[in-house]
Image (cartoon, rainbow, N blue to C red):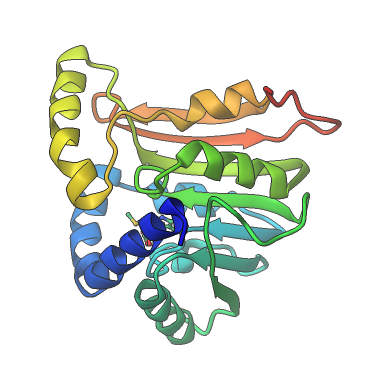
Length: 216
Ligand SMILES: C[S@@+](CC[C@H](N)C(=O)[O-])C[C@H]1O[C@@H](n2cnc3c(N)ncnc32)[C@H](O)[C@@H]1O
């Protein structure tokens, strides 16, 4: 087994263990910090949509009816809850196990790619972003929301200290800024909000229509 697959299995088991309490904990965070992000992100998704690291499917109620949704997730236990939720909502969605760092889809397969509150948890988030960019069609939209490095230097120091515990214990990163990678890929940032002392950031970015300015 390679070191990366050992690491992946470890995190899979971690999320399996947390699946039963996830909705309650995340429901609290949605209410106090993340606010209307799920509706904001999913409401902009159209056509064939991929949600990366879909978790327990908390975004499912927020997608417009016409969307053809595929969701991938590392943890079978999280995905099982997403399946149940899709059934309860009578929502047709193609759910499968997968690794955000190695998506099993052809290039340019989707009109939109959604990822919420997972780029903080995916071990190699830059690789995951590269994969999201790859599977997006030219002109397609990347829709992201997450907690990120604060715009406040004092708070950022606190986040740096917090990470000393949260990365080894829960794989949770606090100092990432996915928007930088998205900009570097030549995407046009169409909508962008940052709030709660710059800790929460959401964006809509369009993939260049012809060729991308991917860095080497
Ligand atoms: C904080 S939860 C967010 C879940 C969901 N996106 C939401 O908004 O509620 C992070 C999720 O990322 C998933 N995850 C972590 N690493 C992953 C990977 N490499 N590939 C796919 N999913 C991954 C975890 O299993 C977990 O379900």
